[in-house]
Length: 268
Image 1 (cartoon, rainbow, N blue to C red):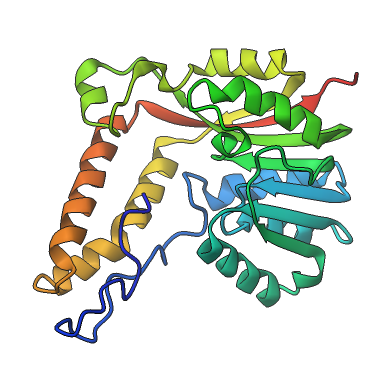
Image 2: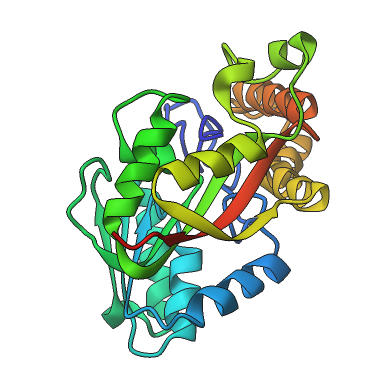
């Protein structure tokens, strides 16, 4: 998704001074997560009164900041490799008066020593916990999460799963080298969490409406920009990437799911 160029990506002498397309201004969460579900997740996670929160692959740290706002006195740490995303998170923390309670670090989550924490958030970022390539990474990532959460804490895992087995035609139009083995089914995903030392307290999945809101908002800035700037030097490449992403979405729409699993660690 990051292949759409940010504003001002081209700066040759012949290029106009007008910037390229805006970047993701329509999104609050970088995934299929509605405000309604986010509010329910935060209420449930905050009810356990975590004193420390760790967000792995935090991106804009939106959920982390909302949990901190809901739990007075809690402190949080967010880890991500994207400096731009962390800058956005820092601005949001300052705007909400949370900058003194959150630390945002540009570093890898592999073998991180930032835990254990009372609440660990890992939404769409399990691949950041290990050098093992997907899909084989998942058991190792889940074991790492168990080491990063306190015995009486919680983990919020956001993980992809197949809602049904994709057809060869559907796979051929998804991401490069897409395979039916790229994701488990939901039942198999839950089994993997249990094998890693958790019990699933709450299981929920993104709806088609949430996916459509996310994918539309993801593309909206670029599509409007392309309609208004068809002759811009960046337009041809941006158009090709936008069209490719939309075609991929149409192939995984209704096939790829995202589970939000609230996991309780089994006491050892």
